[in-house]
Length: 290
Ligand SMILES: NC(=O)c1ccc[n+]([C@@H]2O[C@H](COP(=O)([O-])OP(=O)(O)OC[C@H]3O[C@@H](n4cnc5c(N)ncnc54)[C@H](O)[C@@H]3O)[C@@H](O)[C@H]2O)c1
Image (cartoon, rainbow, N blue to C red):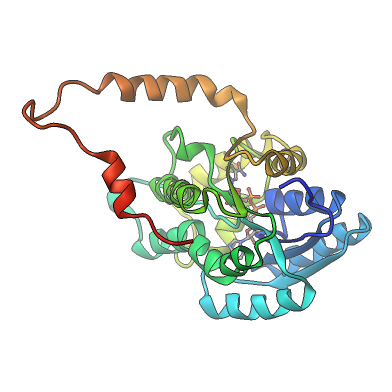
């Protein structure tokens, strides 16, 4: 998408961190921005920052896990402008500890915010974006941990793999359409995500090892990249219609090692008599009208 000026951008998790940085960067390019967030205080702070920038902006409360909240958000947004850039970005950390000890409610909440919300976002806005036929763009925030997972929360890693998987599937679905798509995969960013997670997790204050891990992660992320340049990088990627948005090149050697490992695992067919999958037939069987 070349022309960002005048477009309406809708950004979930837009009250803070990377979401607010994307909103500010898009507004600097002349977009009208809607920041949507569950946290009223952050929304207000975000709205103040955008107003100080001179941006044309709307701040609305949205719980990305709640379909009714999306219906209300669409009504408010439609009155502001037709969404041309959709940034499905809200996310939370996943708690910690051994997989078998996870609280199912924390697990489910993590998936609801980090994965399921992309469906709600697209059910709300993508149909209209396609129907208008004008150049439009969707950005899904995954994470570098969805490409090369470090030894952190299984809920966070796997829900971010889901976000990446959704973006990869949509990349096929949207190919050749008026809607471009990017998947944002940042490394460490100095945002409030640990505090967000602590405040919003549905059960159990963090105790014991989980509390220690969370404090340690807060300290590590405090040294991460500032969100501002990440927002600007996203704007460049939207203009360039780049699918993968990588902001932290220091992860590249880990990606190379992981793919080398994966490629080295390929060997002979399990059934030497089998002619091999007809991958083109799979694509043809799934072809659907736009
Ligand atoms: N900070 C990092 O190091 C890092 C790295 C890779 C990816 N990410 C991803 O970037 C995205 C933004 O996170 P951030 O680091 O800017 O953190 P952040 O906590 O500063 O921002 C996330 C925002 O999402 C909002 N939010 C949480 N649950 C919500 C819900 N149910 N409905 C609506 N809003 C909700 C929070 O209130 C918060 O304002 C997330 O998807 C995160 O997983 C962050």
